[in-house]
Length: 317
Image (cartoon, rainbow, N blue to C red; front, side):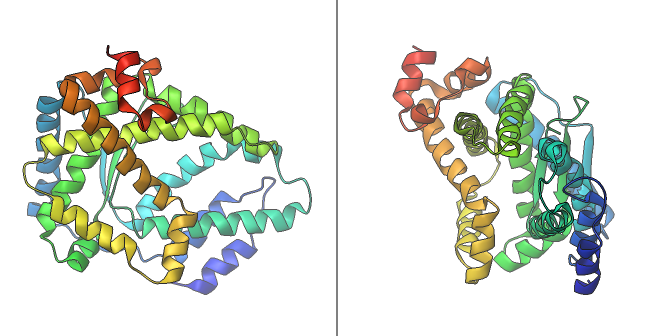
């Protein structure tokens, strides 16, 4: 790793837009160890088996017909950065189109540095990722496993690596089930995301777009947790508790960075969504909860997430 090379890449950021994406990739990778991808044949087979088993079990529990993405990759951290550069670039396109209004060179350097730090921190912590490739020109989805992070965190938590890897695989496959059951979901998220980012690029805040985006993502995370409870073939309360303890720990700077990256918001989405779907399933079962994916209008509103009975009355009387 080379801090000097990272700083040099940021300082040399160039181009016409507010972010130099080539410099972002170079700077992020310069301060991020790629990690090992030396997988044994047994481990390679383990990843494949985990995904296959997860697909079978999630299909059985949800009743949804879906398939896993064509693109399934076991990555190192640099691979993950490269894969997500394209996603960040698509999301930030409205900002790039407007460009920096004043001091474009300085703004470009700051923006490039900010994105580099963000990607570097995430690359060191992401375990698995179901990527619906939002705002892309194709309907392809992808599934990534960041093997060095799974290995490191399994050792830090003192849990069995194979079991931990399997837990991650099951969680990500539940997301594939959701997007498979709701072909409209990608477009729904894209529209809210584009509206919110476009407003920010013009100096406005579209609160409603971000509120609807947060509600939809809360439903996505909560329903995934509901499926996990029925699909994973082992108890996993200990894994979740150890992960939570790890998130709560760390030095003050690490906790600040996690808040700045919105990782606390993601945890809130898990918890809020899980509580909503547990209440719905307790009354109507998984089948009753699954109508959330029948059409966009069936998504819970922000208010209904805290009042599941209101959603049941409206959608599933």
